[in-house]
Length: 252
Ligand SMILES: O=C[C@H](O)COP(=O)(O)O
Image 1 (cartoon, rainbow, N blue to C red):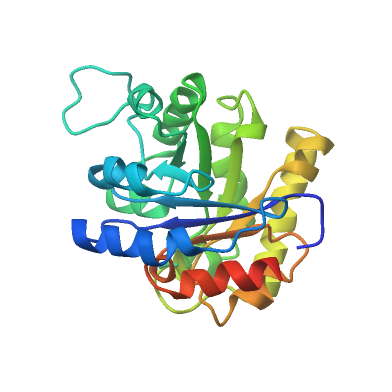
Image 2 (cartoon, rainbow, N blue to C red):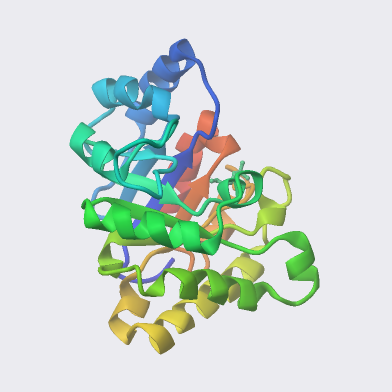
């Protein structure tokens, strides 16, 4: 990355870790990260069940995030946690639109937009996840899919300053097959152009666009070297000591 945008690295723990493992990982890895606050913001997203535990031990300079929020306000919605409840509890970030929510739990673009509306209404910051699946990439539809997913939230977003966009090609998530630096850069440039054409040049220049999909301590350096890759959303490697190495090489 070569810009005035501050780097952003998120660890999405997905549906992983026990209570004991959460304690060990926060104490031994997350809380020992070396973070230059002028250069980098770091976020961790444990399961909803572990938010309280992590909140009680996490370093205050690291953002705590939920992995999802309800598309509805508080009320009779069994199993859901409302954006207002996250905010009330002291969680200021939420991941929205992750491909696992979209593909395994049927979250449509419309549901994603409802969540974005409520999250912003209640003052949350959002990591908005977008990206194409393998057949869409092979069919040459990557830009169409990414544009469709951005168009779906456009009218819901009242403040792009509260949003980090995570480009996560589905075919790269958890597969060990990361996008090449050139593939990531190409889509990030497209996303920035979408901002120029659909929002404005300031938002295009200032919005962080991070990459997710099989990021490791081995490939992070090359990916972060791309001018429009502003950081990472990391799944598997965020559960390991490799997270520390990724943070280190990204700031170097
Ligand atoms: O949210 C994170 C992404 O799904 C990437 O997961 P991964 O690093 O395990 O491929």
